[in-house]
Length: 184
Image 1 (cartoon, rainbow, N blue to C red):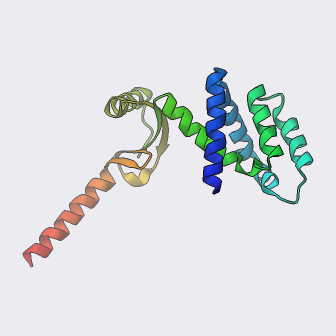
Image 2 (tube, one colour; image 1 turned 120 degrees about the vertical axis):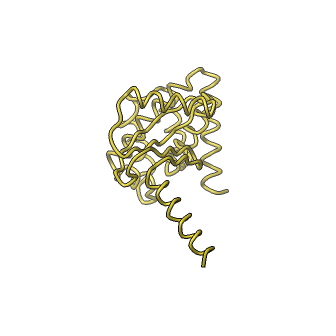
């Protein structure tokens, strides 16, 4: 079985258990915290993936890092992963759980890029507009990229809305080139 299938099965099992125990949000927040550990310490991922490090040491590490910082359900899940020698899948499991969670909450992440900083009222207006367009709640992630020259781009999963000046200039350039080729 592939890593993705295994990770999805564990994520789905945890999600279903969290739904039954009414702790979907708690587990999601626990996973956000655990993800931060991976961002802060690249070594954590290396340790969990290492076949050389013994299981009892990995369990001890899980206990030291997470026992007091996450819910009992999440902590027991981490121990189960370690016992089943699936701790190396934790990052993928977190990713799949997040997808299940966001789908359940009818929410989606949007990556919004502008050429310069935009004020909060315009940010709220952009988010509101796309929430209406997509019929989902949006978790926005704003970024500045002067290379787009002006306007905005919005990326949601594999869909991109590009209203940047850079894109409009490229379209104009391509149209002019196409017209010139037709004339020749």
